[in-house]
Image (cartoon, rainbow, N blue to C red; front, side, top):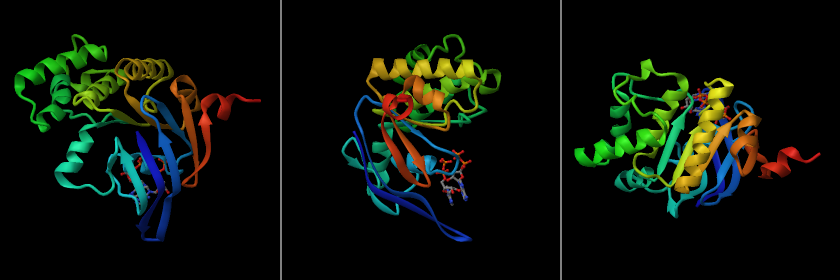
Length: 232
Ligand code: ADP
Ligand code: ADP
């Protein structure tokens, strides 16, 4: 499903070159919930952003659903990105638009006609448990509800992969659990592959099948969550 081969990412900074991701190899299976954990600065975000082409690797290759995401451009990259949804720590919603309009946005960009769009938006609102809130503005919602909008928007074009960038880090523990339950349901119902990055062990233990521990840009450990975290 996702093949990361010998991927390195260097940034040029005013203090010289910074090695953010260092020769990472990872294979993520279709339908898996895969967690990447590590301290701040370990390279998690950079790695995740390379999975949807927001950053380009300095070296190595990344393929998602057999498409080489690091070499395609233009229309091909936009099409490939429709198969990859992403959610964020601070939700990244459009604040002047309603819940419905936020969720409809990627459908508009994809050129889906209005009648189909409206139907899809209502399905998504039900799927994420936001029934009755379609006409609300993001500022009128709780953090958990905002993330539900983010999830609905990410799923609008039926992606095969959902990338989650510290998606529960701005939420209290109870809300975190409800969002993780939703991600688990979506994974099971839709067979969606989920890749999440977090600095919270609890998140990994609650929903991930496998985990990679990142340190200084490298994968320091990799395996089933039980083997990596729960063996004596
Ligand atoms: P994490 O998500 O694990 O906190 P990041 O991938 O955000 O780690 O960052 C890894 C390293 O790369 C850090 O040292 C960070 O400062 C650096 N970095 C990330 N993005 C950039 C950028 N656009 N320009 C320069 N340095 C960056
Ligand atoms: P996160 O908390 O998700 O790791 P950050 O707040 O660290 O995100 O980074 C937000 C944005 O700033 C990203 O686009 C990242 O690439 C960029 N960035 C992070 N560190 C640096 C850096 N040292 N120099 C320049 N850009 C950076």
